[in-house]
Picture: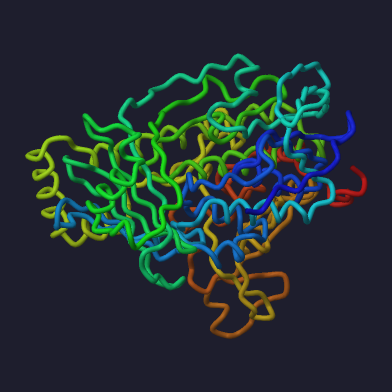
Length: 544
């Protein structure tokens, strides 16, 4: 197993941000801050990448962030993105969905992976950034704050004297049992589901080419609900509810493992049981996601039910929202009050995805046979209607990712059907050389005005340093005449998105969310943006 790079401790007063925890959330944050040239120290308790496959899935929101970091292409070499999700009861499959829909974000809508490999790629990505250091084998045991920064006390897990590390801000990505959250005295209310589940991780017992469709199955049988999931890189994961009268000790014995695997048609003698473990799950959200200069992210802020596979993606969404704001404060002189918009923007999405995940769980885990049969019949009947069948098949019930605009950093006054708070779509676009590129390649991580000729960038935004991408209608390709400095979306994805809101131009934040449209923005918004945008004459890293 790949081990974490271990560096010498960073001198006190020498970093802008400390990240505590190097799981997917912390590693993504380290890459985001490194990309922006922020002096960052990462501290992690474990020297080795955790070998157990806790998470197995991510969605388009995380994929778009990883694409922006230049890591997603490598991830794709070990991911399965052609995923079919089945809900099955006995021999009858009553619902099948597909992962392809990404709501026009330009990346796969779902991917399954082997988590240790995902973490390896994220950690290797940090090596690109000389201003980011990683130190493994340290526990955070103390924290104090003052008006200028945070001082962490760190204790080597292998023994030795405590160390201190000072930073302007701290991101706590140290999981559901977060020591930082506990030091801050922030409660984590919610539910602990007493029902036990048992997970077996196998080495593959079949041949699955890397480009083959992957079938993820919810076993929706009241007698023993569970999950059956072939995974990339030769792994297979099966999960079972622990029934009354069963003990974990017995299930982990050879006899117990044989019996469970036989329920899924798997011969114990023909597989390698890589790992097995029991777990219960939690549904919790921290009372608040920050205290002073310390911010909670990922499981430290919210523990998601497992049924929708949203744990990793939610943590990635958190840090994608938070890191550009920290950069704006540290590098661009933005008012630190900008950081107060982190939780109001992110919490509504966590709440809606938690409800969505619980809905899937309740659908899968019905306890009575009669109720389960009624469920099966209802889904099968609904699927006979083409529109409903299509909606279910693309998992249309999943909440779209929009940000909370109340108390968020968006245009103050939005017109009807405004795009404010939603992702800008990511189509392929072509410039005057007719070479297609993904839109995010041009957006990068800057404030950008994206508009048609009828809506040029407002003068105040241009003077503040906002970039501009000039759009031409798709008809420009018919003549092969795309003016220099302009781009065309040949599939009209942006044209349709703009048309629905009546917009001809939009202001896009560094995280690719729409601040507002040409119909929303006022002179007060122009002045507000000027306070968070880096002037063009400033360099990114050398002057920091």
